[in-house]
Image 1 (cartoon, helix red, strand yellow):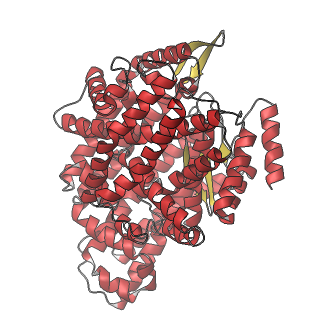
Image 2 (cartoon, one colour; image 1 turned 180 degrees about the horizontal axis):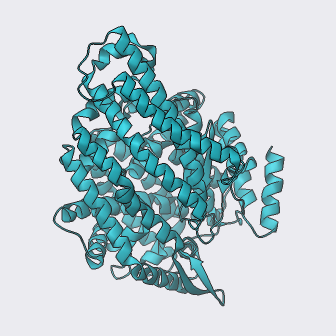
Length: 611
């Protein structure tokens, strides 16, 4: 299989192309009879689930004892709900695979819109199930039922979540309005930003680039080009800012209303509950990260010195430093990752070989394709990865990161949707771990120029996650506080973003060359279901570093324990999982020790700059 993968990859490169992913593991095509039949069957299954819930009496007002008939009803409802959610998740991923690689695909957009309309009913059924579980003697049911026992953690979470439900009528109305409110705003942002293009001169030729390719110019060595790309990007965001701001105001307004109606004091409280994280742990982590900001600014000053600049501008953050040493073509990146994953375990190596050999990855940027990178579960033990690969170490690191997500999905294969509902904070654990494996391996045989380049690339990522993520977290806190009063204008959103960036980057960046439109560029702000998708990256980085330190102390026994942790992220809270490795999440000292990994890299970077 690796030989087939290498041949196909090299063939794609020779033709000037990067591989596109293969979604035929599910259906031959979006317009195939097989997909149409499965799609209709899925829509019918949601209606059938509603009939079953009616028959079983699923809903609020149950107040029954945990006798055998009730246990049997819980088992039937739980099994049926898992089956439907599994089909929805898989079909949704299939459609999303078409839309995120070409947002102009009208057929995929139409199918996803139809599925979302039917998911209104599913959302209502999920709410009914939660309300029902909240009124049942759940501990007794878990004791009596092996199926309930296998779902003990998510059922207990639902039992607690039931206290934060609106009335049945209000929850039904919220579900019915979702496709034309928060979901619609999110869709607007995704579709609009994926189709934004801008004209810029690159290498002597005028080109019209999608936003993903334009932003990739920030990695070029020519400062004048980086600066021009930054200015063109800001102009493009400004030209499209009004509808994007409307989307952000709409999403955050909805979140605030529903969060308050459901009895949460703040959207952050809701995020922490569903993220299985205690407030004390978040406070300890944020405090440790803020204490580390001067260390990260030291890195920024060192990078400015390496680039012979008095101070970095925003468009210098991703500028290369050192000598990459190798081109890191797609095929080279694939081979290197596969080999280094093998040093951890054959299972991780096999996962990488399958991903590259079976075309799990859509690699290159193109018009209509969304920017950034992500990994999604598709079916069984298979995932799909979207990337916008650039031929540098950053591209290698991003691939390793997303393959870490695929490995996480692999370890959850065979579990039900309810058992594998991994919270945001733990979703970045495997990705950070895999990035670290690749980084340390790349440093081993590197000369001074290569070591400088790789360390700087790694510190770029750490700076983004510690410094920039803190700015995004601060921005979202300020955004929610302001949005409670009224909608915010484009200029007000820009001001909040600049204040947040100044607060974390401080003198590390030129205050006159920041990025006021980062609120438009980051899609995480626009999900009505995932507020504060920023600090989970910080958690993932530092928790991943903590696990990697434990791996180094017991490499032989660690992989099995690690796989078990990844398989359990939807079946236990973060504190319980961390305790398996003697980690106390509410202790600032743990987070400080993980940040010491970053500090050590800064010291290594300084030695190379100053040596």
